[in-house]
Image 1: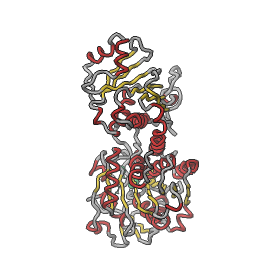
Image 2: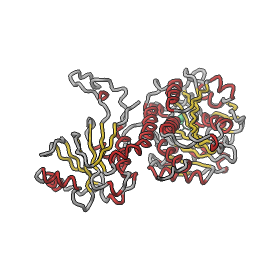
Image 3: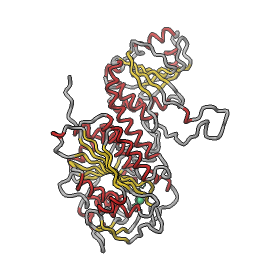
Image 4: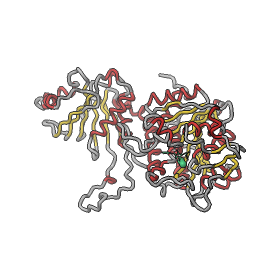
Length: 515
Ligand code: BES
Ligand code: MN
Ligand code: ZN
């Protein structure tokens, strides 16, 4: 797994020692107290640099001073934070990410000085560290040692670098170590999800995915695996139809986290369901070759579920949650499903498969049945890179959100707003049912050209029993190939981990008493 930066916390009374030192500067204020002293001892070099660079202290703008006279640091970076009184945790997180982006890639250590700014927002150093760490992620596993072009004399390759060490100096000092435990748990989950999404499909096959999830037992999760035999005897033929053309066996993995005492455990589980198509070639309804490589990321729903379950376990969240993922590979072959095939799903409903590339909903249909029959859901959230149409509708800024329950939908949008993983609600309505009614079976797996993301969600709704609060996130536009941002420069973004972690934390975990 990709390594996290090493983060430490220190008091502002101690002196920075790293080769890179970062200070913040607020609009309309003088230099922060420590920096004012430094300025004096460098003969005014800092104020001169500010003037020459016409540094206005706008948020995320920087001025850099290299080899500052009278200082042991090689690099002094001054970061504008605009009007710090108005900065919320999310904005501090973005500043952390932006600072990581502005430092050279090979920075090994940096001291971050919350001098004169953190008194306004006590948790700012934590948010900063979170953003810095999110941005620091890079998937370098397949960059061989010694550089990528066989340049023997270039001793250091991209993969030889240890993650940077960050020390955050603030008034709260080492007290923040405890608070960062929660963020570290979150980062582990996001890094895990990103690693899974970035991994190529020849490596991350369904069996390999199973092994990586089995390893989560050491985190305190209960891991149950259903192999093809078990899936057959459960009648999960819709999901099995997707994998039947592949040389790789399909599997379902169930991850259980029980973080509440038995006595309180009566009201059911938060159930997270993830689409885990390890590669989606389209099957017999094969996709065009242009861009097909991106379909290694068609398991991003499953990755988000695995990520959030890791986080809940790592931070010992006081909640009951179950993650379930369906792992398959969608390939064309002599054993593959044909257009026109009719399968009987585990729910008993028959499905006419008119396009083998509309495979995600077949996987989810059986997972939804399993969740309701065996996992005692309080609510269910499905996550899937389900439709290309959601990119047409919402682009790469919002996931599509569908729900049969207004309260649940509001909670998800609110959680997303809070932490910056956005979701926009689209309609479900029985008016769309006629588009997926089949002549020969109960339902068909495509709805025609119009409203592609809605008909996919409406298909899923047919597998949800009435009275079960259910929401579906179509993350095809968010989970991979997302534009670089302050807090992500990786192809796989890990979308959904922070959203679901915060959703659980905010709405389903008892607040610990302030002491
Ligand atoms: N995995 C794709 C959806 C997708 C597209 C994800 C682009 C990420 C980026 C899904 O299985 C699919 O192929 N959907 C089809 C459905 C159609 C055949 C009804 C689509 O969107 O074209
Ligand atoms: Mn497909
Ligand atoms: Zn797919």
